[in-house]
Image (cartoon, rainbow, N blue to C red; front, side, top):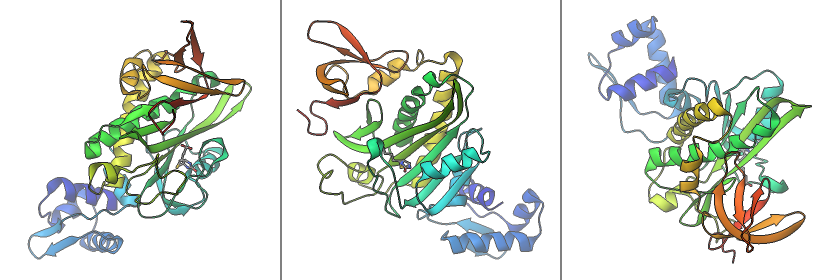
Length: 326
Ligand code: BTN
Protein backbone atom coordinates (compact mmCIF):
# COMPACT_ATOMS: atom_id res chain seq x y z
CA UNK A 1 0.00 0.00 0.00
CA UNK A 2 2.92 2.39 0.69
CA UNK A 3 4.02 2.44 -2.93
CA UNK A 4 0.45 3.08 -4.05
CA UNK A 5 0.04 5.93 -1.54
CA UNK A 6 3.25 7.45 -2.85
CA UNK A 7 2.12 7.15 -6.46
CA UNK A 8 -1.23 8.69 -5.63
CA UNK A 9 0.22 11.63 -3.69
CA UNK A 10 2.74 12.24 -6.45
CA UNK A 11 0.14 12.12 -9.19
CA UNK A 12 -2.24 14.44 -7.34
CA UNK A 13 0.39 17.04 -6.49
CA UNK A 14 -2.06 18.40 -3.93
CA UNK A 15 -3.55 17.40 -0.58
CA UNK A 16 -5.28 14.04 -0.49
CA UNK A 17 -7.62 13.56 2.42
CA UNK A 18 -7.17 10.73 4.88
CA UNK A 19 -10.76 9.76 4.15
CA UNK A 20 -10.05 9.37 0.45
CA UNK A 21 -7.00 7.22 1.16
CA UNK A 22 -8.99 5.03 3.54
CA UNK A 23 -11.73 4.51 0.97
CA UNK A 24 -9.28 3.99 -1.88
CA UNK A 25 -7.39 1.23 -0.08
CA UNK A 26 -10.29 -0.07 2.03
CA UNK A 27 -8.34 0.37 5.27
CA UNK A 28 -8.74 2.29 8.53
CA UNK A 29 -7.49 5.82 9.22
CA UNK A 30 -4.95 4.32 11.60
CA UNK A 31 -3.58 2.09 8.86
CA UNK A 32 -3.18 5.09 6.55
CA UNK A 33 -1.57 7.14 9.29
CA UNK A 34 0.88 4.31 10.03
CA UNK A 35 1.82 3.93 6.38
CA UNK A 36 2.38 7.68 6.05
CA UNK A 37 4.57 7.67 9.14
CA UNK A 38 6.68 4.84 7.79
CA UNK A 39 7.11 6.69 4.51
CA UNK A 40 8.24 9.76 6.44
CA UNK A 41 10.76 7.61 8.27
CA UNK A 42 12.07 6.42 4.90
CA UNK A 43 12.80 10.05 4.08
CA UNK A 44 9.71 11.34 2.28
CA UNK A 45 8.57 14.85 3.08
CA UNK A 46 4.83 14.44 3.63
CA UNK A 47 2.90 17.27 5.18
CA UNK A 48 -0.21 16.43 7.19
CA UNK A 49 -2.74 19.23 7.66
CA UNK A 50 -5.97 18.85 9.53
CA UNK A 51 -9.08 18.94 7.33
CA UNK A 52 -6.97 18.89 4.19
CA UNK A 53 -5.03 15.65 4.37
CA UNK A 54 -1.58 14.66 3.15
CA UNK A 55 0.71 16.41 0.70
CA UNK A 56 3.95 15.10 -0.74
CA UNK A 57 6.19 18.16 -0.76
CA UNK A 58 9.45 18.71 -2.68
CA UNK A 59 10.84 15.29 -3.27
CA UNK A 60 14.40 14.64 -2.40
CA UNK A 61 15.50 11.46 -3.99
CA UNK A 62 14.64 8.43 -1.87
CA UNK A 63 16.05 5.30 -3.48
CA UNK A 64 14.34 2.26 -2.04
CA UNK A 65 11.72 -0.43 -2.31
CA UNK A 66 8.62 1.76 -2.22
CA UNK A 67 10.03 4.42 -4.50
CA UNK A 68 10.87 1.78 -7.10
CA UNK A 69 7.47 0.10 -6.81
CA UNK A 70 5.66 3.40 -7.04
CA UNK A 71 7.55 4.38 -10.19
CA UNK A 72 7.17 1.13 -12.12
CA UNK A 73 4.81 1.51 -15.07
CA UNK A 74 5.30 -1.89 -16.65
CA UNK A 75 3.30 -5.06 -17.09
CA UNK A 76 6.06 -7.56 -16.34
CA UNK A 77 9.56 -6.08 -16.48
CA UNK A 78 10.40 -5.03 -12.94
CA UNK A 79 7.77 -7.19 -11.25
CA UNK A 80 8.47 -7.96 -8.58
CA UNK A 81 11.25 -5.53 -7.84
CA UNK A 82 13.45 -6.29 -4.83
CA UNK A 83 15.65 -3.58 -3.41
CA UNK A 84 18.81 -4.18 -1.39
CA UNK A 85 20.69 -1.49 0.48
CA UNK A 86 23.73 -3.71 0.07
CA UNK A 87 24.22 -6.92 -1.85
CA UNK A 88 27.32 -8.74 -3.09
CA UNK A 89 26.25 -8.47 -6.74
CA UNK A 90 22.77 -8.03 -8.21
CA UNK A 91 23.74 -10.59 -10.86
CA UNK A 92 24.68 -13.17 -8.22
CA UNK A 93 21.48 -12.46 -6.29
CA UNK A 94 19.38 -12.66 -9.46
CA UNK A 95 20.93 -16.01 -10.37
CA UNK A 96 20.17 -17.33 -6.90
CA UNK A 97 16.60 -16.05 -7.15
CA UNK A 98 16.18 -17.51 -10.64
CA UNK A 99 17.39 -20.90 -9.37
CA UNK A 100 14.85 -20.61 -6.56
CA UNK A 101 11.89 -19.94 -8.80
CA UNK A 102 11.90 -16.18 -9.46
CA UNK A 103 10.10 -15.61 -12.74
CA UNK A 104 10.49 -13.59 -15.91
CA UNK A 105 10.61 -9.89 -15.14
CA UNK A 106 11.84 -10.13 -11.57
CA UNK A 107 14.27 -7.29 -10.91
CA UNK A 108 17.00 -6.97 -8.32
CA UNK A 109 18.15 -3.44 -7.53
CA UNK A 110 20.86 -2.36 -5.11
CA UNK A 111 22.19 0.88 -3.70
CA UNK A 112 25.58 -0.71 -3.13
CA UNK A 113 27.40 -3.85 -4.27
CA UNK A 114 30.26 -5.32 -2.32
CA UNK A 115 31.39 -7.57 -5.17
CA UNK A 116 30.11 -5.83 -8.31
CA UNK A 117 31.25 -7.77 -11.37
CA UNK A 118 32.26 -6.49 -14.76
CA UNK A 119 33.01 -8.33 -17.98
CA UNK A 120 36.11 -10.44 -18.47
CA UNK A 121 36.46 -11.08 -14.75
CA UNK A 122 36.89 -7.41 -13.89
CA UNK A 123 35.20 -5.80 -10.91
CA UNK A 124 32.60 -3.02 -11.10
CA UNK A 125 33.02 -0.14 -8.70
CA UNK A 126 29.71 -0.02 -6.80
CA UNK A 127 29.68 2.54 -3.97
CA UNK A 128 26.49 3.45 -2.07
CA UNK A 129 24.24 6.45 -2.53
CA UNK A 130 25.17 7.46 -6.03
CA UNK A 131 24.70 4.96 -8.89
CA UNK A 132 22.29 2.27 -9.98
CA UNK A 133 23.00 -1.43 -10.11
CA UNK A 134 20.23 -3.73 -11.26
CA UNK A 135 19.65 -7.12 -12.82
CA UNK A 136 16.62 -8.31 -14.78
CA UNK A 137 15.70 -12.00 -14.88
CA UNK A 138 14.37 -13.58 -18.08
CA UNK A 139 13.11 -17.12 -18.46
CA UNK A 140 12.66 -17.41 -22.20
CA UNK A 141 11.66 -20.45 -24.18
CA UNK A 142 13.73 -19.65 -27.26
CA UNK A 143 17.05 -21.30 -28.11
CA UNK A 144 20.26 -20.16 -26.34
CA UNK A 145 21.71 -18.73 -29.56
CA UNK A 146 19.10 -15.97 -29.43
CA UNK A 147 20.07 -14.86 -25.95
CA UNK A 148 22.96 -12.58 -26.87
CA UNK A 149 20.42 -10.20 -28.38
CA UNK A 150 18.81 -9.47 -25.00
CA UNK A 151 21.85 -7.38 -24.07
CA UNK A 152 21.53 -5.30 -27.22
CA UNK A 153 17.87 -4.75 -26.40
CA UNK A 154 18.88 -3.64 -22.90
CA UNK A 155 21.30 -1.17 -24.48
CA UNK A 156 18.42 0.38 -26.43
CA UNK A 157 16.33 0.48 -23.26
CA UNK A 158 19.09 2.16 -21.23
CA UNK A 159 19.54 4.84 -23.89
CA UNK A 160 15.81 5.51 -23.92
CA UNK A 161 15.51 5.33 -20.13
CA UNK A 162 18.28 7.89 -19.71
CA UNK A 163 16.77 10.19 -22.31
CA UNK A 164 13.33 9.98 -20.69
CA UNK A 165 14.71 10.66 -17.22
CA UNK A 166 17.14 13.49 -17.78
CA UNK A 167 17.15 14.33 -21.48
CA UNK A 168 20.73 13.20 -22.08
CA UNK A 169 21.31 11.56 -25.46
CA UNK A 170 23.72 8.67 -25.10
CA UNK A 171 25.13 6.25 -27.64
CA UNK A 172 25.90 2.54 -27.75
CA UNK A 173 29.33 1.01 -28.04
CA UNK A 174 28.59 -2.48 -29.29
CA UNK A 175 27.74 -4.68 -27.58
CA UNK A 176 27.70 -3.77 -23.90
CA UNK A 177 28.54 -0.15 -23.18
CA UNK A 178 26.58 3.07 -23.15
CA UNK A 179 28.61 6.19 -23.73
CA UNK A 180 28.12 9.92 -23.30
CA UNK A 181 30.56 12.59 -24.43
CA UNK A 182 32.79 9.77 -25.68
CA UNK A 183 33.07 8.20 -22.21
CA UNK A 184 31.55 5.11 -20.67
CA UNK A 185 28.50 5.78 -18.53
CA UNK A 186 27.05 2.27 -18.25
CA UNK A 187 28.18 -1.33 -18.53
CA UNK A 188 26.19 -4.53 -18.85
CA UNK A 189 26.91 -8.10 -17.91
CA UNK A 190 24.59 -10.81 -19.21
CA UNK A 191 24.88 -14.33 -17.84
CA UNK A 192 22.80 -17.41 -18.44
CA UNK A 193 22.21 -20.94 -17.32
CA UNK A 194 21.78 -23.35 -20.20
CA UNK A 195 21.30 -27.09 -20.42
CA UNK A 196 21.66 -28.69 -23.83
CA UNK A 197 19.46 -26.48 -25.97
CA UNK A 198 17.33 -25.12 -23.16
CA UNK A 199 17.70 -21.83 -21.28
CA UNK A 200 17.00 -22.06 -17.55
CA UNK A 201 17.37 -18.33 -17.15
CA UNK A 202 19.16 -15.25 -18.41
CA UNK A 203 20.16 -12.39 -16.13
CA UNK A 204 21.01 -8.98 -17.55
CA UNK A 205 23.00 -6.85 -15.13
CA UNK A 206 23.26 -3.11 -15.65
CA UNK A 207 25.45 -0.61 -13.85
CA UNK A 208 24.85 3.07 -14.61
CA UNK A 209 27.15 5.77 -13.29
CA UNK A 210 24.55 8.26 -12.15
CA UNK A 211 26.17 10.56 -9.63
CA UNK A 212 29.68 9.21 -9.30
CA UNK A 213 32.21 12.04 -9.17
CA UNK A 214 35.47 10.26 -8.70
CA UNK A 215 36.76 7.40 -10.77
CA UNK A 216 39.68 5.08 -10.21
CA UNK A 217 42.81 6.41 -11.96
CA UNK A 218 42.81 3.60 -14.53
CA UNK A 219 39.34 4.55 -15.83
CA UNK A 220 39.26 8.27 -15.01
CA UNK A 221 39.94 9.27 -18.61
CA UNK A 222 37.33 6.97 -20.10
CA UNK A 223 34.41 7.00 -17.65
CA UNK A 224 31.78 9.57 -16.77
CA UNK A 225 28.44 9.85 -14.98
CA UNK A 226 25.02 11.19 -15.88
CA UNK A 227 25.32 13.98 -13.35
CA UNK A 228 28.61 15.04 -14.84
CA UNK A 229 27.05 15.17 -18.29
CA UNK A 230 23.74 16.86 -17.46
CA UNK A 231 24.94 18.97 -14.54
CA UNK A 232 22.21 18.01 -12.09
CA UNK A 233 21.20 15.10 -9.87
CA UNK A 234 19.31 12.34 -11.68
CA UNK A 235 16.49 10.48 -9.86
CA UNK A 236 17.62 6.88 -9.71
CA UNK A 237 14.33 5.05 -9.15
CA UNK A 238 12.72 6.94 -12.01
CA UNK A 239 15.68 5.99 -14.18
CA UNK A 240 15.34 2.28 -13.36
CA UNK A 241 11.58 2.43 -13.99
CA UNK A 242 12.08 4.20 -17.32
CA UNK A 243 14.63 1.61 -18.42
CA UNK A 244 12.17 -1.18 -17.53
CA UNK A 245 9.40 0.54 -19.47
CA UNK A 246 11.62 0.84 -22.53
CA UNK A 247 12.85 -2.74 -22.15
CA UNK A 248 9.33 -4.07 -22.17
CA UNK A 249 8.56 -2.15 -25.34
CA UNK A 250 11.68 -3.23 -27.21
CA UNK A 251 11.55 -6.83 -25.98
CA UNK A 252 7.99 -7.21 -27.32
CA UNK A 253 9.23 -6.17 -30.74
CA UNK A 254 12.14 -8.63 -30.53
CA UNK A 255 9.79 -11.47 -29.48
CA UNK A 256 7.69 -11.08 -32.64
CA UNK A 257 10.52 -12.32 -34.86
CA UNK A 258 13.19 -13.47 -32.38
CA UNK A 259 15.69 -11.28 -34.16
CA UNK A 260 16.51 -7.59 -34.42
CA UNK A 261 14.77 -6.98 -37.74
CA UNK A 262 12.54 -4.29 -36.24
CA UNK A 263 15.21 -2.77 -33.98
CA UNK A 264 18.33 -2.87 -36.10
CA UNK A 265 17.89 0.52 -37.73
CA UNK A 266 17.29 2.26 -34.43
CA UNK A 267 20.23 0.43 -32.84
CA UNK A 268 22.59 1.32 -35.68
CA UNK A 269 21.49 4.94 -35.43
CA UNK A 270 22.75 4.96 -31.84
CA UNK A 271 25.95 3.05 -32.47
CA UNK A 272 28.90 5.31 -31.73
CA UNK A 273 31.24 3.16 -33.76
CA UNK A 274 29.13 2.94 -36.91
CA UNK A 275 31.12 3.90 -40.00
CA UNK A 276 34.32 4.19 -37.95
CA UNK A 277 37.52 2.28 -37.74
CA UNK A 278 37.32 -0.40 -35.07
CA UNK A 279 39.78 -2.85 -33.67
CA UNK A 280 38.40 -6.32 -33.05
CA UNK A 281 40.10 -8.09 -30.20
CA UNK A 282 39.54 -11.65 -31.38
CA UNK A 283 41.19 -14.39 -29.31
CA UNK A 284 42.47 -15.78 -32.63
CA UNK A 285 44.08 -12.48 -33.52
CA UNK A 286 43.41 -8.78 -33.49
CA UNK A 287 42.31 -7.01 -36.65
CA UNK A 288 40.89 -3.69 -37.74
CA UNK A 289 38.14 -2.68 -40.11
CA UNK A 290 35.22 -0.35 -40.66
CA UNK A 291 32.19 -0.88 -38.45
CA UNK A 292 29.08 -1.24 -40.60
CA UNK A 293 26.57 -1.65 -37.78
CA UNK A 294 24.81 -4.80 -36.63
CA UNK A 295 22.92 -7.42 -38.62
CA UNK A 296 19.56 -8.92 -37.63
CA UNK A 297 21.23 -11.33 -35.21
CA UNK A 298 23.07 -8.57 -33.37
CA UNK A 299 26.50 -9.39 -34.80
CA UNK A 300 28.71 -6.45 -35.68
CA UNK A 301 29.52 -6.20 -39.36
CA UNK A 302 33.14 -5.20 -39.91
CA UNK A 303 34.40 -4.34 -43.37
CA UNK A 304 38.00 -5.34 -43.90
CA UNK A 305 40.49 -3.51 -46.12
CA UNK A 306 39.90 -5.98 -48.99
CA UNK A 307 36.20 -5.08 -48.98
CA UNK A 308 35.01 -8.34 -47.43
CA UNK A 309 32.71 -8.16 -44.41
CA UNK A 310 33.06 -10.27 -41.26
CA UNK A 311 30.34 -10.85 -38.68
CA UNK A 312 31.72 -10.37 -35.19
CA UNK A 313 29.86 -12.38 -32.59
CA UNK A 314 31.52 -12.12 -29.22
CA UNK A 315 34.70 -10.10 -29.70
CA UNK A 316 35.49 -6.94 -27.85
CA UNK A 317 35.46 -4.00 -30.22
CA UNK A 318 37.52 -0.90 -29.65
CA UNK A 319 36.59 2.29 -31.35
CA UNK A 320 38.84 4.98 -32.68
CA UNK A 321 38.29 8.18 -30.76
CA UNK A 322 36.35 6.47 -27.99
CA UNK A 323 38.09 5.34 -24.80
CA UNK A 324 41.24 6.95 -26.10
CA UNK A 325 42.02 4.00 -28.37
CA UNK A 326 43.81 4.91 -31.58
C1 BTN B 1 31.26 -4.08 -17.72
O1 BTN B 1 31.19 -3.08 -18.43
O2 BTN B 1 32.31 -4.62 -17.45
C2 BTN B 1 29.97 -4.69 -17.18
C3 BTN B 1 29.58 -4.08 -15.88
C4 BTN B 1 28.28 -4.61 -15.31
C5 BTN B 1 27.99 -4.08 -13.94
C6 BTN B 1 26.63 -4.43 -13.46
S1 BTN B 1 26.20 -3.59 -11.99
C7 BTN B 1 24.79 -4.58 -11.81
C8 BTN B 1 25.19 -5.97 -12.19
N1 BTN B 1 25.76 -6.65 -11.05
C9 BTN B 1 27.05 -6.92 -11.23
O3 BTN B 1 27.79 -7.49 -10.38
N2 BTN B 1 27.47 -6.50 -12.41
C10 BTN B 1 26.37 -5.89 -13.16
